[in-house]
Length: 250
Image 1 (cartoon, rainbow, N blue to C red):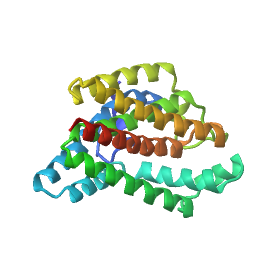
Image 2: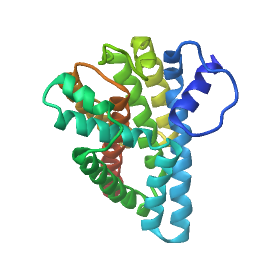
Image 3: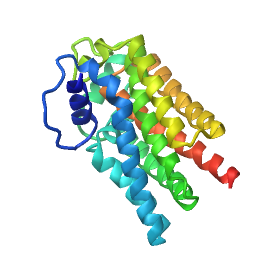
């Protein structure tokens, strides 16, 4: 079972992890919330260190860049590919072909720029309020949404692809187990603050439904790029909702 954790860590992070990977890549999905919690705690700690230095703008930027570095920029790349394919391809086939192109087009550049700017604004508010647990919650929920998308939608490419091994074996059990784990971690992170819990979970579900619904309509399924984009969208929605909640609470 620990081989699934090895696969999850190697897939979602740049951390050098010893051990043998799982024979079934979908088994690693059970560990996505654990990895999400780990990454969230690291990014929250980065934010706290910057906050202690008294430079909130730099702190927010370091959280943002730290998240990109820890994930090898994989999710940001997925967002750019999705934007290029969904808005540049008029047909399903054209969208999938564009998404496979490693070059970033105009739509991808715009999407990345907007995403980074909006994330930085939300993070700046959270850092200023000292809401580091809410930063971690966004990172955690972003990885849970990847499981939800992989488990509820088919793989879109008939010829197969990098993420097919994760999607093909995913199902209801993955959703149930990871959702329970995620809720458990959130209760601990947010100190059983029910209103904060409802706020971040609702925002994450909106991100999942938006990404999944658009992907279903455009390419009738998901790809690795869709999973990465879903993670980016979820982080943004959770951080914005969390910043609004934390500001109201303050």
